[in-house]
Length: 405
Image (tube, rainbow, N blue to C red):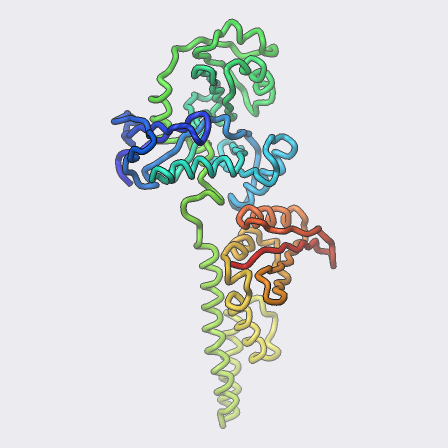
């Protein structure tokens, strides 16, 4: 990671020209700036040293109380918190999370197709930003203050940890009172720049925080400093399916453990076979007992040994499942989802005939856990066909189909 950050600024749409600035990471000062015109080479920068700032109107931000064991689960749960409040088609909605602050998290809901267009535009000029932020989300404000900044036909309403939004300047007077009324915290003062404070105050419900006029800030300088050290509560849209690097540790760790058990089980099986052929019955009994003890240590969930050879074979079959199961061997997504949703179980994998279509049946004791797991799977697998949820033997189950790669 270099000491210089390349900050890209998106225009009103993903197709608009990108502006850029080289910024000192330590001070946030602008070192160089320009515009990415058609046919011109982009400034050289690694993904880790590149960040894209896009208009806040590209997403809907909401501050929510969200407790989950992983970000994957939290993003899946966020979909229910935006239920009925999004202009995006449900199938195209994606979610990003900021870090928890005071028991709450900022969640950004956006159109995954739209964000992909921003990323494709950057890739087309040879850049691949590792971070993507909304300008209103990273706009710095002090605790208890909210800022309304007119950017010239477009306004940022920044509330820090309380949330933010961006809208046409003409709509601020109509939307700000409703937003302020449902803000999840106290706003002590509203600081306005480029918007007449005297025209804003009468539109606020009483009692209302005072509205003060501040000088117009240097938009580029403020955003460059914020991009060099974005606030933790601001969601980075480069997460989940849009992350530049996928997390592989969980899946690899799970299957590494299975492989280790398989090796140990194979050694045990050889030991049992040797014991069976051993002429000294007393020595064979001692060796078998030692093998059973070792097996119980490796598999503490085993209540008792009934047939060591059969139980070792079962462990081997389980460990080898990833090589014969078309869904698991073709993709780490299934194992990742199961790891992130421990309450969900994969009960059946079926692959009929020569077709590439694989059918998987998942189940859980609770439908919300199953919904969250399927939401994660659907976000990662294109054209996933989801069946109807059913209840059987006290568990809810759901069948999905997808093409094995």
